[in-house]
Length: 212
Ligand SMILES: CC(C)(COP(=O)(O)OP(=O)(O)OC[C@H]1O[C@@H](n2cnc3c(N)ncnc32)[C@H](O)[C@@H]1OP(=O)(O)O)[C@@H](O)C(=O)NCCC(=O)NCCS
Image 1 (cartoon, rainbow, N blue to C red):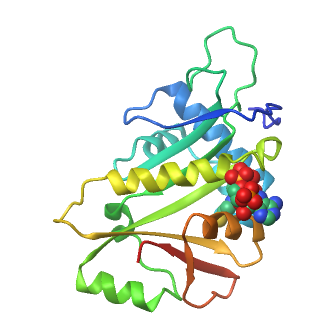
Image 2: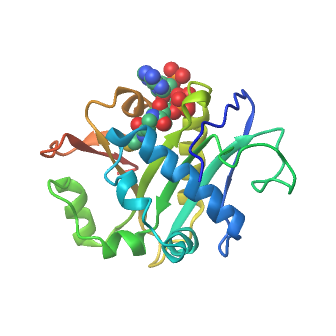
């Protein structure tokens, strides 16, 4: 597998999300960009390249096709589909950026990580919020400062707002964790309406919340 940069610089791009039952090519594209992100910006993520490069094909399949997550990606506008036609000589890692939204069913299965925002915990206990989580935000270095990150996060928010609430009409809240030293990501999230909430954890991670 190659982790070479894709060398595509575009000011024009399209944002989409992977369908359920993604094809093998789509899974490969996701795997490539995910591993590239962990390899290039290890400081930005909770997981590591060493860990995920050992994932089996079944794990990648489950990750992409899991019902309770949505993988969103950006591709240059001149490419019409997220799968390259066979014979195309672009490198495989042509996705410009990606982000993933975890749905409430998945969040409920993950025990809250301390320190967790108190106000959010209180509202969850009351049962009047549906909590979604943004993970895996990454834009390829060659494609940064073009608005890709902002477009990915806007798309993620729109997806959440459009989602049907599982248990009646609950308030939708989106959370994410970002390292307090990550000025670029913090500015990106603040710019679309996320606010910092709760104390910073021992490794410098802080929660940001949208919609509370
Ligand atoms: C953070 C990241 C996703 C931003 O992606 P991007 O496509 O370059 O961001 P955009 O071009 O959409 O910029 C949107 C806003 O983010 C902020 N921003 C982005 N890069 C910035 C930088 N280097 N310094 C300061 N602010 C920055 C700005 O507020 C910008 O708005 P503006 O262009 O109106 O000033 C990208 O730098 C990245 O992938 N970093 C490494 C991985 C990472 O940190 N992921 C987040 C994990 S929580």
